[in-house]
Length: 603
Image 1 (cartoon, one colour):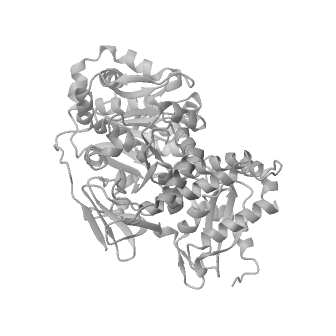
Image 2: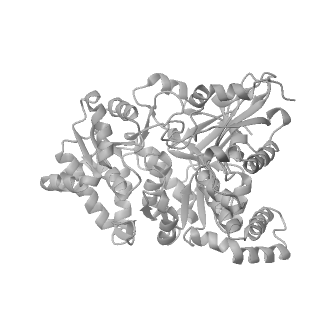
Image 3: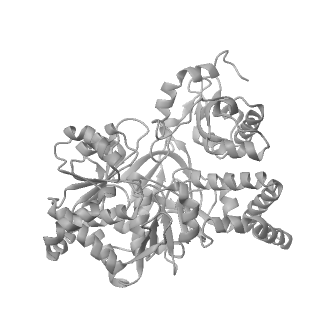
């Protein structure tokens, strides 16, 4: 099948906007919690009702007006995920402004580009350090009038400044935008070149969220539904969920520090979780290492295998046998229940995106009692274009198109998307817009296939296809995603363009190595020592062998080389959404790549 479409479920009044969506939630349950937040890291979760949140949004919006923000102005937000981020987002929309997110990890050069390209007039940053970064480039952004710091009382400043602004002015501004108007400009983190500003409309968010809620009602809108955001709100996935919680009626929490994630999950008790595959891999690997270190490695591994086998059996006509059900109950009592409790104990659903999760992990978590619904989308599609449904899920695929969405496969295998979530264009970049959009269809740059039931599978990135000297086309993502699931491995970059065989650059995981060493009865080693340790290398060798089983001999990894440094956001080799900047890695580690092919031929 080359094309599949899911019909629209809910039509939205074209004259409405995101403020309308917000108002509907407040009106439907003014005294019910909408958000829960902490004022101290170790403190309790404090509920904020719809009525209270609306009052805070209006007060901050008045402050923006008092600071000179006009309808259509760009308001920048540079912060970790926290309650104030959501508050500022809704306040900017209430003031008629267009919020522009910046990652808190952005370099001075990236900040300068976004401030000038988007013409940001007021910027709210989280910390004094962020303010210093902005100060470095402020001469390049002459239209930036104001910089406020959250940690230094930015919200309170705005509330005080706006005390004299009339309620009627906010009511007027809230009604100005229509669905077709720009709601935000999100800059792609981009693995190559300067980030492009993706203009997403009020309609992109409004229509997509209400239709997603209608289609995934039992996941996001069941009684007591709640989710904890720990992904960066500068990323479109988290931003989409923060908006979706309004029509879903779900309670939203924020955690800015992933180091306390498990503690926050345990106390917040989400019913659904949003994460990238790396989070699910880390949870699994950490649990396995703890079990091994405690002398219960064999019990964990048997339980994990039972969970996977049980989940696979759920997809068969006869289902799990009575004996398998008994084994699963034992595994649950010994291991699986503890993992559920570590995630808060109430989570039944998870939505994963950003990279392939992998069939094995998908089955493990479903057997655990947490159904991971893989989805697919990009910034240009307001996050999700496709997702698996609770009653119609195919593990290993990224699901069916959401309502109001069409997906097709071009002749060269590229995935194209058309629908309510497709962006209006790139900010001030008509050339890039024309390259990406044709007759409403967005060229994603990803390669994929649609099966006979309409489920989409992603096979790789079009620009990342490796062509070996023998003319074999190789999609590196298949191998990279499988290897990254190993507890010793942080990042993988498959290489081999114009070479006689496929090879890989590998980095060790500074968080995973100590636990793996301890679990295997080995002494502590430095990263450099671990990179040459025979047991570490033997384990990675086996991981490469397992990954190679997913591809043909011509596509398999014949050699790998461990780099002496990890690839991180901090050193510039990863984007904020954890994508590898492949071209930069190949440039900076050209010597290591050359060493892989010294002496060349591998049969």
